Length: 290
Length: 333
Image (tube, rainbow over all chains, first blue to last red; front, side, top):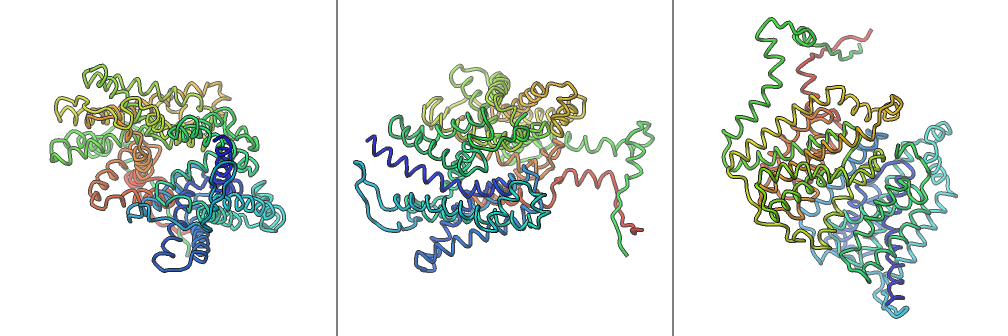
């Protein structure tokens, strides 16, 4: 029981990290809190589902196409909406929230609710680890999570675009004076964030089914992890997802499943009140509280 | 030939705006019409509408109050994404007063307004120091958390909610109570915002550190603004509890957070009148569109985006400008 809980907590932590990392990338680089994030996650899952079940495209190309579509949607969202209100944080929040709401509720309206809306697992097998059964998909999630984090680190530290990303994150005006087009980089950051959401959806959704309500949950989980870890800090995201992941699983096993959501929400509240920039956030004391 | 748009105050505005030596009925009407139209409208509407639209009018008033409550907070520099917290707390407070202690509906509404306001202020007191988006995130989270807590601990009827709450004695009392409170809130808080007290609140929004520099305790003023706004929201919730004779988990629903923001954004944030106007546009619109079901929320989402991007000042400011000023194209020299 105890070891099994630890194994599942580990998987849960990686899932949380995958869900949060795209949101974190966008916020850390362009400062846009993309509240349409959960909607983009669900959008890509439904896109894969439709490509597979309506157009009968095999799973792998369907997943790739839907990830590319979501990335494109993110870029369009920045170009046509966010660019005009850039820098006004609360307008950005309201606009992205509006977009997210529109996407999710559109799917709900079109009747995309039910257990048949699910994506296939990659490999249908399960293993016996530490006294519990763990299916192949969960192991793939852990491996993919590690690979994505490593790939993201290499991308931001050793490629020209990645360095430009970090450049505008540090100081947008200095980056401009060095010839980095900050609008273009911000577009990329929003679309990469969307792409990561889609990638996470492709890997995680096979565990459950697709539903519009899931979009809000993903947004709240991504927010929770990012707030606790510190908005814009990748190390913080990983640590925070382990904290929440373990806390959730252990409350689920030992207290009751009703309490899992409350644990993460309470964790956010406490962190926000005590240290709004999060455990690993860069101190920007005057911007966040007075 | 390049041209630019020039805006000039109308003559009647210049004559009647500052110097109150009114010489004609026309000038008096010009000044009083914007105030009289809503007041007369609020008084006459309940009489002319049918049964169904009277119910709609009630929810218009409730959402207008929530939007006003959002706007008061927003003008004091606190952007809330969770008006449902105020609404739900007020609703549950009224439910508890009436269900467990059997208080008369009017007393229970009044008590729930104050109790809800106090409770919400206590909930948000620890995060008053947070600014901008951090405050918004907390307000988004708290109503969600309260729902889960009610679900997990099964207090106050749990998922079933409190049913069989006493209704107000007649629909006319319901209608005119809602209209009276809306009128009082709209004009009262507009006056409050225009006073020196409101000036401090707006200054906190513009630049909080310079207000601190002026030797003013901004936390005390923010607490007061929060309490006022929470009371308005809690009244809406308590009132709705007695109209629907039910208080349960749906009172913390996303609708009560999103619609007031949409109303304020569409109508024009920062004026209170804009928030009311927004509610009077959006709620009936959503009733007309009831046939399309869930698509309504999609439309709200799109409304938010379009208005934030294309008309950030909102309808009210736009109309107000047209009322007071005329525009003409002049050549650029």
